[in-house]
Amino acid sequence: MTRQDSMLADAPRQGTDPVVMLENVTKVYRMGGTEVRALDGVDLKIEAGSFWAIMGPSGSGKSTMLNLLGCLDRPSSGRYLLDGREVSHLDDDALSDYRLRRLGFIFQSFNLIAQLTVLENIELPLVYLDRSPEDCSRRATELARMVGLGDRTGHRPNELSGGQQQRVAVARALANDPAILLADEPTGNLDSETSKQIMEMLMSLNQQGRTIIMVTHEAEIARYARHRIHMRDGLIEREEHDSQ
Image (cartoon, rainbow, N blue to C red; front, side, top):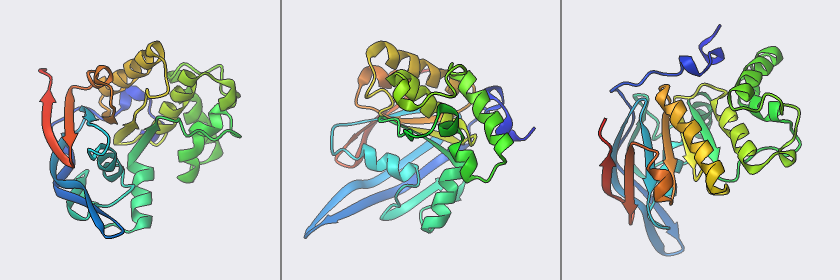
């Protein structure tokens, strides 16, 4: 059995090695004649197996930060090391490959493909990795059962509740056995009880060694993370760390 075929019990173990390092990172956008510094010299180190929440008001830079961490964008200056490799200057193809192999994404709007079944949505990252149909089906079935949707694999997104759709998104994000899970407002479209269920699932994944970085504007949701960054005007205003 390959490492990607392993279940959550075989997820990466927690440790002290940094999986993410940002060194004096800036991100500058130009809008007409105006320069906007979305990130303004950010330093950050995230250890493998930790759980972080990024918070801040609109325009603080938290979404820009997540886009950079997810290799969806590049810094204007500074260095970004992911798993010890500098990815700041990789070309589009290399960034896309790195995202596919090393990162998993969970979005507020779920981003499921309406025409595909639960199983087919979960399989997508493995299809892009050219895994065999049998391998894709086996892994996706395991993950569907793990998130409590083993009896919904043939359903399409419009036949599921919001919470069930987010569970599919979590399973899909885990399909490639990512080094890091990146979650963008993962409970933003969910009611309080369903939000709690999704966050408990993320906590369980973290307790089994998965590194999670989450953007949220909700203090109650951020408290599930043991490390919290508060951003303002493109800077990390402060960090909070819960005791072990």
